[in-house]
Structures are given as structure tokens and as C-alpha cells.
Length: 512
Image (cartoon, rainbow, N blue to C red; front, side, top):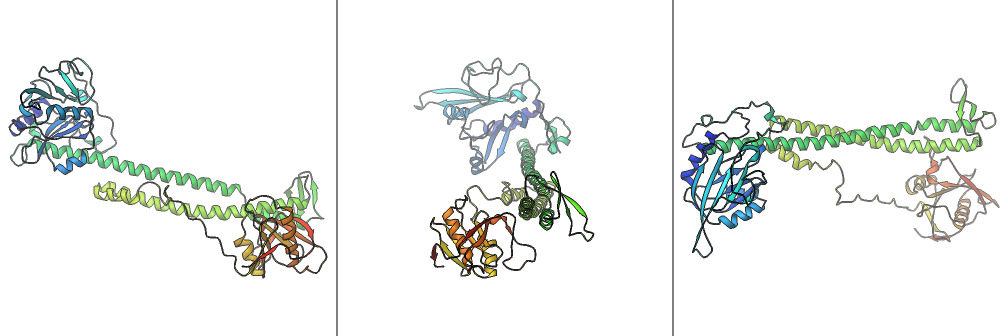
């Protein structure tokens, strides 16, 4: 039978007291376990593994009865040590329980103790009063004159505060259970009476109540753990879905890379035929078989070549962004799919109400984020590609490393695998030759002396090596791209500068 209760009624409480009286009377109090902020288990040493359980949490139904537990189980659950517990242990240590009585018209149960002092020459009387009255539920330790020495919870009113003579509450404020989202919402509310739990030697009322409330608490704990796990996973899913949306917006904001490249190519192809009107340029679209005239936006303060360079720069940026963002989007979509599968598994566990599976699920997934590096760990740095024998190495007068490619395939590898985005890149203008890369650890401008030395090496290792002066184009690696299906060594520059130098082998040669 499923029940939803506010409190134990008077008749049920009287039956419980009548049941525990012959079992506990005359016994001496042993260890007191605090199982929660408002829950206690007291060992009266009945010799059969039973303990007096007292709960004073209004939302969990204030109650008392006997429970069967192992000592290790109670010790594991007992992780609190409040003022009341310390005070009660000191006052009641080895005290003998002489009387248990319930107030006739109140849900108040009184336990009286005789406690010898340390010299065993005098005996003191103390009382524990279990007040099981809804919102005012509390446990009091009284002296022989019924004066309150300590209380488990803080309650107010006449006869309810430390130092006062104890009095049961004059009126009871009915406790309204908070709205729950668990299974308990659907349970009809009825009174718990002794007739609901037929007494028998095999199943006394305490055991039936313990079983009933243990099931209720197990249900609450399962629901709480399930809600926490589900909430954490759904928060993670929402975060990833929002990130996916932002990445999609970023991808669209960068524009179509090929459109940028096409405009740059058309501007260069129409350098002498283009017609300009303010910030607009009209060119012939040679990519269209009908060769129509189209309009391209262009800053009127820039030359057509400078405008083209800007479009090529935008093309490189958009292309690189598209590659990176597309990879991140695909990875994120896979993570979202996996996460939805995990949530589906959790929903099946909750539907089955499988406590073991839920515990294993929480332990397996950790619920601290999926595929994320723990804070205590650091991502491994990428291994630097080896330079190999296809690249000559030099050191400039400023101490910077200069790398010179040998064959066409070596040039491709040097430019697109070894060089970093902010490294400086060089090539002889209008002549085949080596790609040259100057390492840029400081990520700043190229020192003038290093610029000249690297350019001289570039001219030296080109087909213009016999000329007196050679034009060398230089730029940062991020402005160098490779046309689709282009031959090894062939590249496109979206921005560059040019310097005239004498071809010669400059700088200090470093052995590979």
C-alpha cells in the first residue's frame, strides 16, 4: 500500500510505545548515532541488533520505532556530531532507562534515565522528550525538574527554549509538505493507523514502519539522484547545442571562400579594362560563359591590385576558418549525438527504477562533462614536424633560423607543414626557386638585417641566381595558399612586399 503522511496519529504512536516498552525498559543507553541533522539511532543493547530510531525532520514525517541495523552500517551513515549529540552523550552515558510513556493527548513520548556520576556515589535523573508534532517536532534533554538543557532543533514558544520548563506546544501548526515532482505526487493522502499494519510475531509494527519508510526514502533518494543526473546531462546538451549554433553563425559570417577568391581573380584579370564608379568596380566575369559585366565592391582609395589582395586575404581567412569550423562542427555534432544516446539510456534506467544501474551510470559517466580534459591534466602539445634533409638551415646575424627548401615537394612541405602562420615566407619574383621561411618566435616584424640575408638566400637558390639584382617577394606564411590541383611548389600570395637584393649565400649555415 502506498501512503502519504504528515505525522503519525496518536493511536499508532501509542501502539509503538507499547511495543518498545518491554524491549527497552531497564536497559542501559549505549552509543548514540546521528544519522542526519534531525535523525538519531540509540543503542539500548537489547541484544538482538535493534536500535531505537527517532526522526524529527518535519518533511520526512516525525516518528520513532525500532530498527534492525548492523553497527558498521550505522557508523558509515553517522557522519555528524552536533551540540545535542555531544551533550546527550556526556549526560546520559551508561544511563539506565527506567520509564517510557506517551502523553495521553499529545504526540509526545518521554524517556526517563537514572545516571550515576563518575564516582558512582550519586544518581541523577534526566529525561529525553521526543516531540513528534509536525513542524514543531524536536528532541529535548531535560533535568529532573523538567528544565530544558539542550534541544536537537531550534523551536520557539513557551516551554520550547533552553532554560525553560518544558511544555508541549500549545497548538500545532499543520505542516504542508512541499510540492514534489517525484512519484509521491500521485499517492492519495490517508491516515496511517495500526489496522494498516496487522501485528504478528514475524512482523511487528516497528518492522512494518521501518520497511515502509525505508522504501519511501529510497524512492526519494532515487528520484533526487535521477533528477540530478538528468539535469547535469541536459545542461551539457544545451551548452553544446548553443555552441553548435554559434559555430554555424561564425561559419556563415566568414562568407563563401571561393566567392572571395573569384572576385580577386576577376579584379586582376580586369586591371586595365575595369570601370570604377566610387566604391564600385565593374568587371567582365570570365568565369561565366556569357561573360557578363558584374559589380564588385572596392575601396575607392585603393588600387585594383590592393583591392584584389584584400579579397585574397579574405579568401584565405574564410577558407581556413571554414576548414577549422567545419571540423569543430562535425566533432560537436558527434558529441551531441552521443550525449543524446546517454540521456536515452538514463531515461530507460529511470523508467525501470533500477537503483543499481543508476549508481553504475553515475559512476561511469562522472557527469562532469563529456570528452573534456580534467582540470588536473593538460593537453599534450603537438609534436613539431621534423625538418628533414629536404630543407637547408641557416642562422641570421640576428640569431633567427632561416629554412630553405630544395625540390618542389620539399617547398610544399616547408611552407604548408613546417612553417607556422606568423613565420616570414619568401620567393624570387617571376622565377622558379626555393621557398624560404624565417622563423618568427617573437611574432613581430622581420629585422632589417635578417630580411636582407634571407632575401639574398632566396635569390641565390632561384633560377635568377646569375642576375646582378633579383626581386624577392616576402610576406607572412598566413598569406600563402595553394591553388586547387596545383603542381608541387606552386602557391598564391594574397598579400606581399618586394625587395631587391644581390643573390648570395648569407648567414651561418647549420648542419641538419
